[in-house]
Amino acid sequence: MSRWFGLGFGLWLWLPSLVWAQAIGGYAAGCQLDARALPASGPGFYVIRRARERFYGQPSLIDYLQRLGRGARQAGLPPMLIADIAMERGGPFSSGHRSHQTGLDADIWLRPPPDDPSPSRLQRIRAIDMVDHRYYILNAHFRDPQRQLIALAAQDESVSRVFVHPLIKNAMCKAYGDAPWLGKLRPWFGHSSHFHVRLHCPKGDTLCEPQAQVPAGTGCGRELASWLNDKAGAISAGPRTPFRPRLPKQCIGRVR
Image: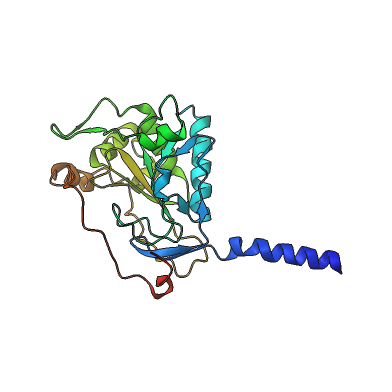
């Protein structure tokens, strides 16, 4: 009897992390329960700017990032630099993104890591812009390793979409032709030094609000042309007023 009691008690301690991890609400108005922290480093990745404590995500996202890191290393690519994911309880940030609230979004920088990836050096590292905004062209920093990493990121079935700068989307279309995952690459201004991965709502998370499916096709035709022709949002307008959406009732009192 005592052995069964010990086993049952052990399962009771273990099951909450499996059962209760949950994304609640929408990507830009929600929160998360029982999030997992992405380790500071692992095979094929480093977490940067950890002092901001935005390295928490749903188990599906943490598993995905670690899986992507291993894939990048197997492909001979430099370790990834992973920036903002979400806060431990999710919700809106005090500055920056409007999304990243449910633990299903992650930013991955397009620059290679420093030769000395010590924690102090990673805290001071800066992004490298892949776009020459004056001439509206990709610059010499955008090369095959960046293309390959974006392609790896988009091919995972758990990925809903990957936000990239329109010029980067154009370069991916030229490099990969009619690859079926190209439709997941969504052009969006402000993503010229990083790309933003968004996962589908986890199965069984009934309070998670999914985003509409991406349109059929590669998205390399007329839709992309409209983004390339509209350069109005090519350069950031600077700091924005903190975003304070109306959160689901299940999030009230849980987020800062």
